[in-house]
Length: 367
Image 1 (cartoon, one colour):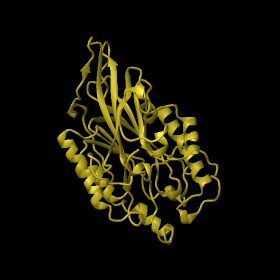
Image 2 (image 1 turned 90 degrees about the vertical axis):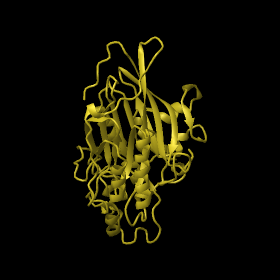
Image 3 (image 1 turned 30 degrees about the vertical axis):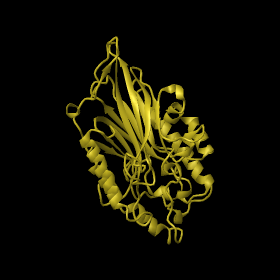
Image 4 (image 1 turned 60 degrees about the horizontal axis):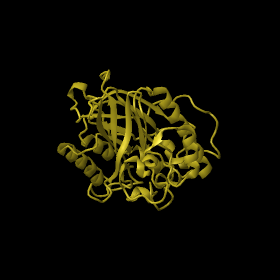
């Protein structure tokens, strides 16, 4: 993939290996605690309907839904400094795109930790915004088995969460239901344990589409950036993959189409992919679109036969019983090209989906 998301991720600062360890890490993740996460509710009746296209015989209808996955690089000082101008620009540009009618329909944000990052999400102007998990969200019961190796206070493995999970879903359409799950207390490794990482569901009602769409967002345990040994961060990632799968199984209505995106932290890791794939049977956008016969318009430069191995930022999908979903275009945003300058250490990954359904007997979506 072109852009920096294919080349580097979450680089740790140099100088003293986080200096004095826990004290500095506490500042890192707690720096945004004084700023409340953005939250907005949009009434179903207030959402503008998308353009709906009918088939030649009038039996089927379709529309599009664009979904952007974007890691904001929203860590605070000392891991990141001087990020406020870039974060303000992210919010400003998304708001300008919304005003022009060219913004993604849905944005899945990750790493929304600092106050400036939270403000950027709010400034994007989306009328419906949900976040989660919060700092105080209790994880569902999960394994109590220890991870390989020993917990280290200097890595932040202190049993306390200093901030929420840093994920948010922003939508131009109404969100009719929200659920979230924090990953287990023994399902994290290293610095990541100071954030209450997890997964959030937003059930989104698109006017004119007969069922809602279940949209999920997550940010999973990092590798070297966690400062935890390989065996330990690998086991933590494996547990999070299982817990995300369990959460989706519990909360997803099989009659609704599903989209699952985020920062999965699996770049260049065959073992993480192998573990993740044991729990997920969802269709991967990259796998579909790399096939020329799919009809997916690929506006990215992908190297090799497995471009999904070159990025952390992914989207998966699944059909509903009444509404089918398929990716019809993939492209980068904020990668230094026409969509805007590089404003994070990740490029935005934008997928446009086609939603399609039979008109006969299609009920209206509840909201």
